[in-house]
Image (cartoon, rainbow, N blue to C red; front, side):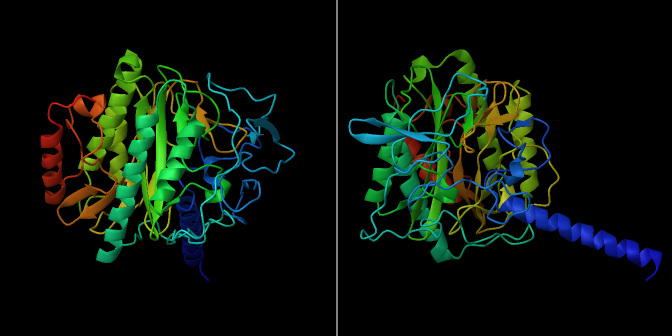
Length: 441
């Protein structure tokens, strides 16, 4: 072999190695980029890429299991205890104390509370369970190359529409419950019961052992907050992230809420939520066949940095369908990643996480809760999107019973509900806008 051919062979091996790493990253939901100087992890300095790796992954940071067959996460979530958690009791119910460390320095005012035992899903109610429901481990990996993206068939799209509608109904119910004094655990109960009533499975439950049926991220919590017994307080901002697995497909969405309503939001909170919402709408407006996924990030980052905010670079949006997290990866910052081109039939999420201060994050000892490193607040919105021949539709978009929030009303990017850019989506928007005209949030 000549020196030139040896060099070519080495380059090919390096390229294939990078592609394998990219495929592993795609299998790591919401996590992104192993090289981040702004990340603080509680133990062993694990990088974001490894936080959601499957068993046997390279440099894997294994999420501890707490036993049982229903519940996903690394905090204690069942009646059995471990060396890193303990139990208390309230009203006859055993409460689980999450994994903590006396040496750990929290960045803000939110602290982990006690958790109720994991909730169960009946096996005799006609509910289809995802492949990770029993052992916490998803079985399907995305395609090796990050630009290889599944195109949904018409019958699959219809199932995803139903799953998206289910998720929207459940998220709206959870949002109506937000108020001073309610605990995030009670919100989780509402989400769980409403999902099961619709013969769906709450997708977060037991996904890589997460202990609850939704994520509740308060104030400085960026994402993956675990519901517990902390009462919400007037002026708190909270993101509720709901995903429903109905008839074999996931519908994934999240939204911000202000505890105490619009009047309780201080000016900085209003600016943060508005900027997050508007950059999200701008990014979704960009979605259409032929555009590149990598260009979504620049739209988001440019909008928020001009207003003094930062976008989180360590967590990302993702493809979704019969598999919870798959290709494409949707980065919320300017990048040149080869994530592929948009095409009709693609389904995925855009879910920017925007911060008042810096975009670095701190991982709690529970290995799930990610907060801002500086303790300042964060906001996020998310839709499951479908690319159509003439644009895009939000499969988890607002419905006739959804309230209009102040950031929707006051948006200079799109006033009112945003359901997409396709002809069908615009027609639905016109109907909803007509019915909501004059309504107060």
